[in-house]
Image 1 (spheres, rainbow, N blue to C red):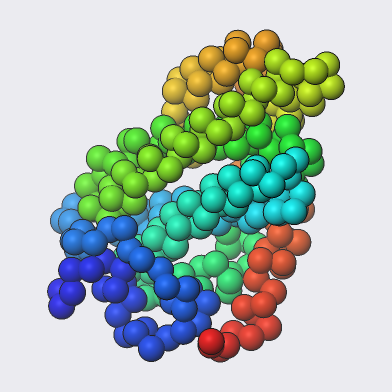
Image 2 (image 1 turned 120 degrees about the vertical axis):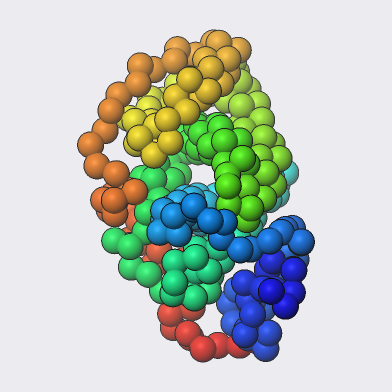
Length: 275
């Protein structure tokens, strides 16, 4: 390998490419990580996992971005934007690794901007509309708790790049979970109206938990977090309800199409644009 800087290696051949992904001044947090796929690691399975986790992050980041100018306070807009940027950074690294191991050599743009909805493998909870702030906090609490538990396991992955991405993500996701938990307690233990909305948000999220646990069974870890938060907030913990269908197999709600249409519109209108 001519360069041990993992992102530059993944981007090799694109040094002068100032398109959507490579023109943003991205700084690689995985400097020095060996990108060689270890013996015994199934490349197809690794690529599929990176793609799914990247899709989760990209779609969730897009939903969080929709709170810009709409959050209750300016401070929350900044916080939600930063959480979205963390997820976007995770998506970029995961897409880059996917393109390296799946045999296509595709870059981040190809995965983010030039796939159709049926090709996405994100969990459906990530794509649901924001509804109100309480629902978004309930979703963020569940997704960050699930993703954190998942990444804690993946930090021991035999693939060094995935392990490094997961280890970095654990630190970010710990903050995401804490932020959502604090808001869940604040709303649940606040006014009668905020309590009602937070309770409704948890109930609306609940039917999608089964899909998360099918993708990675960290049920006990997530249940423990939700129990602790709901107890502090004075909220009931809804009973888990399975839901048919799975975004992991390309079965999505009707909400993914308009989300991707907005996310991908500029890149598709100007696919060779540079700046």
